Image (tube, rainbow, N blue to C red):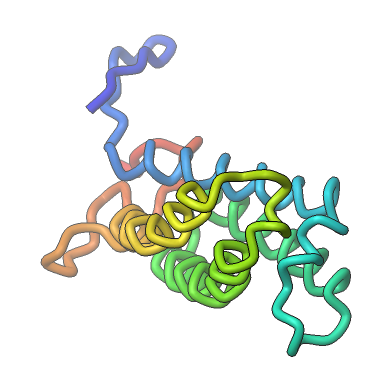
Length: 153
């Protein structure tokens, strides 16, 4: 656990799960912004069965931004974690399509693209771990606290 100094209150321990949520929030916020900055590139990997790929890219970018903010807010973490895990499964076909058709990938090596697909599952596991507390199912005191709110006493 990391130690941070609080003004006039001494050190406070930052739980590893909270750091994981911060990292995930930053990751998904950046991904959400990239969806708006490079809409055409992302639209190229939307599976052809789906209509209006540009709209889908903008909606998924907005979803990533909203869920990243929800990770920081700390309310309903279990629900946010489940939604984010389901979202990762929903976009998996686009990642697979990019790996199958590397011409859509802006020059990334096929090995990198398949690694991206394989890392989707550890990412989901990290999301669930960071948002679901201890394996026992017992709510931890910091579980509902947002990243910036600290422990409730």
